[in-house]
Length: 594
Ligand SMILES: *[C@@H]1O[C@H](CO)[C@@H](O)[C@H](O)[C@H]1NC(C)=O
Ligand SMILES: *[C@@H]1O[C@H](CO)[C@@H](O)[C@H](O)[C@H]1NC(C)=O
Ligand SMILES: *[C@@H]1O[C@H](CO)[C@@H](O)[C@H](O)[C@H]1NC(C)=O
Ligand SMILES: *[C@@H]1O[C@H](CO)[C@@H](O)[C@H](O)[C@H]1NC(C)=O
Ligand SMILES: *[C@@H]1O[C@H](CO)[C@@H](O)[C@H](O)[C@H]1NC(C)=O
Ligand SMILES: *[C@@H]1O[C@H](CO)[C@@H](O)[C@H](O)[C@H]1NC(C)=O
View 1: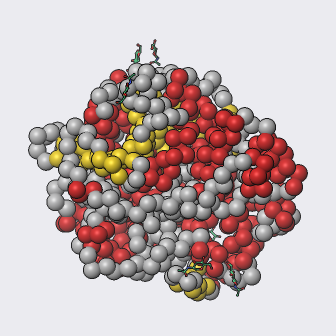
View 2 (view 1 turned 90 degrees about the horizontal axis):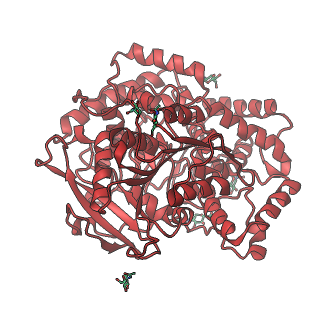
View 3 (view 1 turned 180 degrees about the horizontal axis):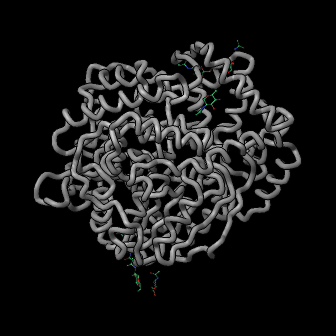
């Protein structure tokens, strides 16, 4: 969930990054999760550096006509694609329509077998995250977790990516790029300068005006209520009436919305990395960071524990590490560092460092080792590694924008946030008061506040959509999954949301990071599989451990972890490899497509 400075091809995608988990393409970094040196003994494939590269989107989505019945076309070598025709406005189903782009990984079990268990619909978060990309980049690992009896379905939510009509406020990619990469960039820390907050506010007013002036009448229908209805259509188009769903991050808001709107249509519903939906719809954004400081402490304490061999930014005490970070902040405030790589160029400044660290909190197993190295380099004045952690391809101004027609753009997520959320006062003083209140709650408010601000200038569409209450006797109990230290979806939100859904259970994973798959836990993923396959919920109060630490750590610990892996059954090892690949490949970066 969050971005880059020099931008780049998908600039303001930051918006869609709030509650977003996945990014592509990625190379797994070094991490303490045992595998590499055990590879020979275990005879398991290493997560390859190209394992998560998104296939080039050569598939022609426009060539398949949107239909009310599902018609699958082969795509991306071994998958199938379809565009489902749905009403743009469910209050007027016979008027204009929208087309939802979907991709499917088919179950290994034949559909006419009694073991076939139907489709599971996935949502990667955002809002604004393209589910097609999730299935293309991580579908095989997720499929290993849930098992061969299920199809996996990823869809780009209405307004987003390959689904049409697409939300876009800019007249060309270049116009978007110029706006997003100039000095107004909203990806700045609100603590970078005295006017950072007021600039973010002013910027949001302009974007709100653009949104209102340049939309064709479809913008107001891009909301979570309608996306939940679209999901019901997807389920029905498969010939089922009950959903099977696994939603991450913002996907927990979408899942809770679906369950509250259609309690009788719940087959299996997992929400993982649970946001407080009420707070989100109230456009408050003020209880997400409850555990963020705790996650940051996990980096510092983990570095101390890993020792100088395990953590390049090591100091003997947490206090010293904090002081060393503070020194880097102050130095970057005075003197940003220019960086030139063989593919791009830019500056490492205070804002960039803040964002890179915050992104790292989402995915400790993928990012902590690299972050520790980058900080160590920074303290000697070398900013290259830090820059590379957020490097994005240089923007290329092609002649033909239509080639990029289906790329997700930041406005999609923004539209969902602002259409869903209660109107907030436009007065700048209100923004200041909110920021001050938030600053008391977390040290990471400076990178979080922009999400709420971004709606101050939003057009006044009617708010006659479902926005709660989140209470229901669902036709099957929900499974909530939360980590003990999640930077943006704190565990208490899982407990709060679970109270509204009769019979639901909260499964806790004892790890830092965003959503269960940020940490490698065989226990968690087995519970999720058991829930989908057999309908068995974990016992209330279940806490799952993870295997291995984000830092390579000391030899004794690494050996113990290695032994633990060696003692796994073949089946568990396969599962472990899938969760390890997921955990080490997650990336807090803004979801930029290739
Ligand atoms: C399932 O479908 C396949 C091919 O469509 C067919 O060969 C097979 O006999 C079917 N199996 C059953 C149990 O109906
Ligand atoms: C802003 O940055 C200064 C200096 O780095 C720090 O002391 C202060 O706590 C920060 N304030 C907020 C609200 O993040
Ligand atoms: C840039 O350098 C890296 C290693 O330093 C190399 O792997 C990569 O291929 C280079 N890219 C280009 C476009 O030259
Ligand atoms: C800075 O660090 C990079 C690795 O990230 C290294 O390749 C480069 O040589 C270093 N530059 C200097 C001047 O030491
Ligand atoms: C759930 O069912 C119970 C009893 O059957 C009922 O009292 C309660 O109002 C129901 N809750 C909701 C949200 O429908
Ligand atoms: C939960 O559902 C059961 C029946 O399924 C009902 O008896 C009970 O009252 C419900 N509880 C609440 C709090 O709605």
